[in-house]
Image (cartoon, rainbow, N blue to C red):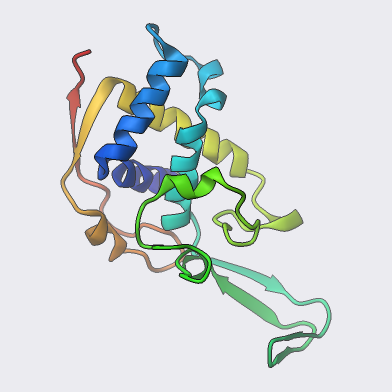
Length: 184
């Protein structure tokens, strides 16, 4: 999930409003001490930020499954034994499901989301067992970073989006950024 976390940081810091809200939540939870592991699960808005990042830049872009029985999907017959591939990026950018899907809007996760509308780790019983760990890791990394540093990007989110291809979400050289220690 490292690439997804890097792009999530970029998405978050590209919006002053999102960055400010993360910092307000950090100040509320952490108060006047340093961030500790027990704080991470309490960061609810930051969890929405990570989920939005994984919606925009999913760790894997394609999920495939073998069909066990004949099934009809709308007007398409899929015979048993067929391999069906789902483009995660297409699901996550579907304007019928997500309003303004190209925008980074963590608030969309403040309400219930259909479990198969958000599938960066697959879904159901065959979903990735590392899903929860990836979300916690993303929260911990972003919280620790934004607690101590101001981050400015060397690339726009739109430029990063040009690299959504292949089987992983980021095939580019990284997310260029500058860190400046915060004076609190």
